[in-house]
Amino acid sequence: MPDTQISAIICTHNRDTYLGAAIDSLLTQNFAADFEVVVVDNGSSDRTREVVELRTHNPRLKYVFEPTIGLSVARNTGAKVAGSDILAYLDDDAVACDRWLEVLYFAYNNSKLAIAGGKVTLIWPPGIQQPRWLSPGLAANLGAYDLGDTTIYIEQPGSTPRGLNYSIRRSFLEEIGGFDPHLGRVGKNLLSNEELQMTEFALQRGWQVAYLPEALVAHNVAPERLQPSWFLNRGWWQGISECYREQLAGKAGIAQLQGGSERFVRGLYKALQYFSDPAERFDKLVYAYGQIGYLNAAIQGLLSTSNKK
Image 1 (tube, rainbow, N blue to C red):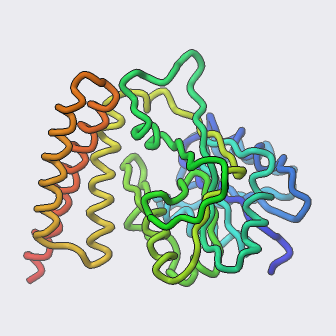
Image 2 (cartoon, rainbow, N blue to C red):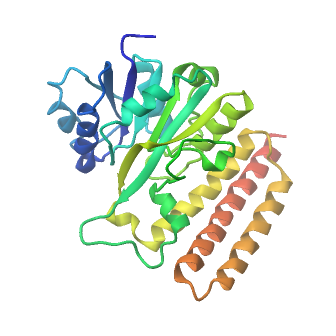
Image 3 (cartoon, one colour):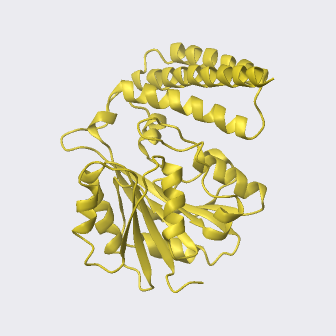
């Protein structure tokens, strides 16, 4: 194992408001072994570089500029720059607890562990509380993640750790060819599902994936995300992401149209069932809207395949 025991990586794009706190939470970790903090500036045009340079007196901190926009691209760049076998990714608008790296590092004494992540709580903007129309399920779209207070080994990809509090073994990442640039956020589009795909790959190959409650991270909720339109947009891109993930797995075809249509109708039906509950009603409407995104991507995929013939 390299001298650096674990590498903390922040991939950032125009988040200078939150970035400093994220970096500081890593530089002040209560961890006796050697670690580094790598900031990947993914084409930012704000004060990102200045925020990092204010802290470059700390020898643990590294800065790299990645001009190609895309979260998966930035994550792969961070992995290339990092000098350890364990890669721990923290979002640029999150704050890690002081034992975050320690908890993650010792978990990898398990030689079968490929991926691990921890509990995520939410930091609401000053003076704002959780809206009445926001269900626990939709709160997960803001990053909330809590599977309890004991370590759990994930068996279903849908329960995979959140990308904002995420670690991965380098040898496994190299085994699967890195993070897939077809998934993961690119600029303002909200493509996702890259962590779900990673967990699928890990379980298929006999690796383990763990939820570690003590690897706690708090995630800032940006005020602009507390609008129903943001969740509808997030649902749309979630549907597209799910469609792409299936296509990458070789599951494209007419069956996607049938499945997406059935889920769309189911979402609308459940929205009517929960008509008197504003949170659950909106939750089901977002789900139904996401299926429109899924169907749109499925149709485009079928047309693309037809044109190639």
